[in-house]
Image (tube, rainbow, N blue to C red; front, side, top):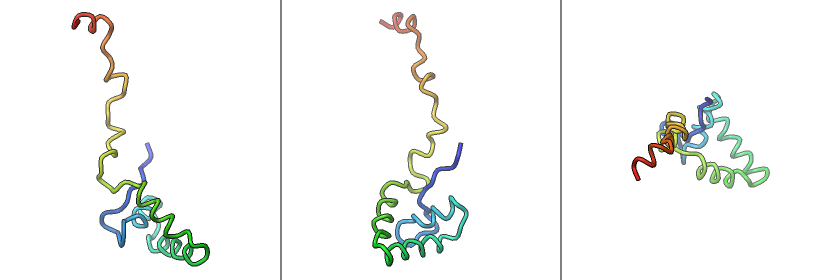
Length: 88
């Protein structure tokens, strides 16, 4: 399974979006920050994109990262009809 993009707790200036993107794509977060500034200067979409990313990208360590470790749905609902009828 691929690693999820998360906002960085250690490499952050505002919300950790650029730090998290840098960690995920293995590039310097400063380059990503410069990209957001360039988007601000040349089109005005930089802050909007940053805020959207801040809202939808979870912080590293938040709930939801353990999804891959959760038991499959089939195991949660594995009671057979016989087991169910014995309980009733």
